[in-house]
Length: 454
Ligand code: ADP
Image (tube, rainbow, N blue to C red; front, side, top):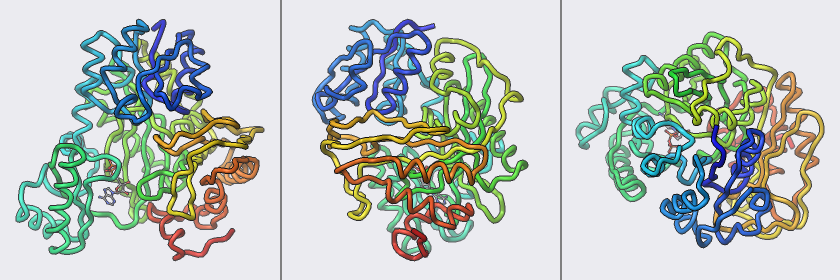
């Protein structure tokens, strides 16, 4: 096992990894930017190294500074968390070159799965359902039109290097496709330095369902069932739950096995997530992408399976075998997570940086709070606005919803505006309670199209 690891991240996930390391008797070194010097979690680490000024480009994304810190602290491994460098195969390669273990999959798996066109080709080869669309990348307008006529509108143009919803355009006709293609290509070139795009059928009413996988370096890949992340706004997840409330056993089995097949084909180890869109009406699911890292919403899976994903990720990186077999994993109860962001939901979700005068978190049975914040902490304006994750676990979905409603009422944050009132509204909405939602539900609700029951 490692004796010391470096955490190349900040906020709640840095704290989560410190805790996992402690329980494994591993020393935890954190890096921090000048803006995070006084963050409570920095004090909890065994060692903390400042790597630069507040902007992420000059600190948390600065690979040479992070590798230098790792060398100075003499660590065995680096945990990248999520975001920042977590899916950067070049960084993983730098770690490998410096003989520092990257706590994640291999450089090759990251490159293969991070390229959406290559990932889709691999999926097709291994009979993982994908959306009908172009065979690989689309080279010209004529080709795009031909594909669209073949599969029928609406279609979506997507960037092969895509991420964060960038480089995507939906088209309902030829004119929209022509301009969408141009825009997607130039957006992808600007954002990722790679203008490669592909086309697929656009599913109007879908749920976002994803499978948590975990593999070791001995060839085992298993799944930890699925999460439903349909409650999103502008591709940002707001509420996640496990298991998916509308999945029957047959579909669940096919979905989870598809995810494992794809990851096995990519030689995957570590924790990862295979994302799908699910057509509620036909029960058909289609691959979206693979995230080669731990995700924000991993705690709901931990709650229903009892598996500590971060500790397992560290253990497999150190070469250990997975300590369970697929048949031993069972779904136990229902878990829900609400992302508490410091945002003003009435002002287009404007970030609410600044000092937290009050910050009292809920507790009691079945409640878990993952946060790096405390009263008196000043939220820096430079990073993500998520200040806490509130997770509840109970025997049934109805009980979990009731538990989340009471936990949200206990959560007291001031003066910064947060997403807590929106979560309370969503948790009370009869459509959400019935599980009758799709990925555009929250946006429709905020636009006032659907009746809200507050
Ligand atoms: P990114 O990596 O940029 O997040 P994804 O492939 O995960 O890109 O897609 C992001 C979101 O775009 C999905 O959650 C979904 O809302 C929408 N989307 C992507 N592909 C399709 C599709 N074929 N049909 C309908 N919606 C889609």
